[in-house]
Image (cartoon, rainbow, N blue to C red; front, side):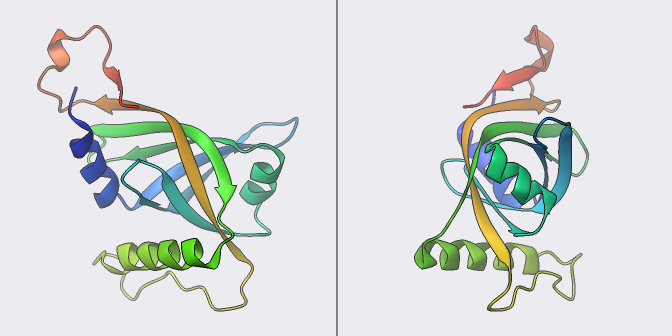
Length: 152
């Protein structure tokens, strides 16, 4: 298995994730979102307060996310709890980090990430409890019983 620095770089370079939430008494719902990560592999994303995913998170904060490399050879399966960031300091820091990450991607020009003041968007943090990797580029993969590795 690769070291955690490898996976941190992977998270820093990836732009989108697929986030799964569960509608109460119903079925999972998957949404593709832009995200940013901190050094503890926690994930941050923005969503409209009226979205189904936010309604689902309000009922059940357990979430799962998948982040995949461009060539699909590496992915991370991330499990944790989503919580809304409410302090202005945290919100400001992570809104800026998300905006800079998205704006730095040359495929997204002009930038599509715009949230005006007074908007109904909320910022969330996924506190990760478990991370599983699928790394088909891992040089040790032929010696493993499973192609998945626990990262956290």
